[in-house]
Image 1 (spheres, one colour):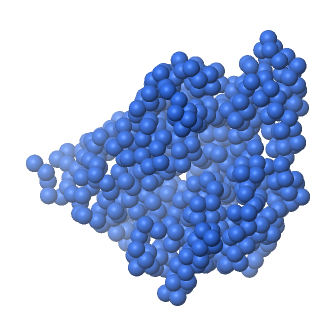
Image 2 (cartoon, chains in turn brown, green):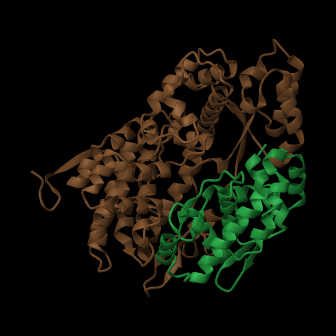
Length: 439
Length: 171
């Protein structure tokens, strides 16, 4: 029998390695977790291809979404003590935190790049469309799903609430930094989240942090910086991501040419089309994608089968550091040499840049860019973090760009054909780097 | 090679100079909405559509010395100017012509660059809510951008400007 206050008869808890326990007392949240669209997130890894580098990184969007919900719940407990907090916003915040990633698909970074999709549009469609999630949200009122979707899209009127889930220091980032550090097994990535929550204060447009808690915020920024270079930008992960993207490109190209697949990718047909339907999108998960990749190892098309074998058996591309301002001088020759040895440079000679990756640093920014992190000084003034913190100022000005050139070293070392051309390619690549890096 | 970077360089070449990061962000977003081939992912932020990917790409072309970034300290903020450098010209000369179609860019880049950042923020925000009816968009803008205090005239001008851009690109 449902209770009139929307609470469960007793609190439910999920055991969680990052937050110890995730507490659910609201019927709304419990029912959202049970929807098929939310349960689908169990089959989508949080970190895409990172498991190829850090074998522990098998955690899913499901774990992360519960974690963001739990952080938001704790934030609200603290903010409820402030006069400015509007208690009517509580469930909107919690639902938005829980559902913020519900539109993610399998390996969504590569899929979005190749097929020009946007997981945030899928999120809105899942929340406002004909879904179990929408049916649960509708119980709170006809406009409730729109409110939740607006918070996630950052177009909600109450900017403070938006900033709790999406800003330079928010529930989403705090959970994924701690969770990704835990599951990858790296020792950096730690910071005192409890302290940050304790010094968080509501301001008109965003959450700000008491100056006395600055060092906890500094730790968070350092964690973000270290995770960026050591985990999110790891060159081996990027190699796997490059191959994954090229598989999708190749499959799409073959589909457009009318190629007959031995295993027709029925579940992907909608994605290959211009406007995939929501019910088709929701059938996709990483198991489905991996199934096709395994099947495509046997395809007649040599590029598709080779790329799939590389991905499935971790025969990744090697890389050299790349300076495109130098590389542009030898690029035409490199491409021609690849064609001469029968290797398509569009698929096997790839520059991957830091801007291709979906993670960012903290940057104080120019006026009218994104809002930076603000400290609340004892006299009530707000000061941007890097103006107060030497540590943050120091890392804010560091080099943040990086380009790597990926290629199949195994093919270039096989001198049973075109030995001279392959030697020349190796010489050109080594001119960049001096030696090949191992993946 | 670096096709997306080449498009950005072409935009800077066509405009001569772009003043302000916000203006650059809004110009690229508007170009994307007009179906020009920019692929950066944008999300709504406090000041309208914003792309972290584009911010990083700008950092990259500056670090490669393809673009010169001039930092200017103003009374209460920092402003940045962007100009294509000689190295960038060299890169563009060998870039995939399909990736940096000079003719298409020339038809609108200078026009956009003449507008203020404030006006382009309004135009890009209208594009962002393009699935909504005009009265609803106006209401949304008043709520989300209360501090900017956009007038009815400015909102009308922005809609007229969008029609003008669509006409220029369609002709």
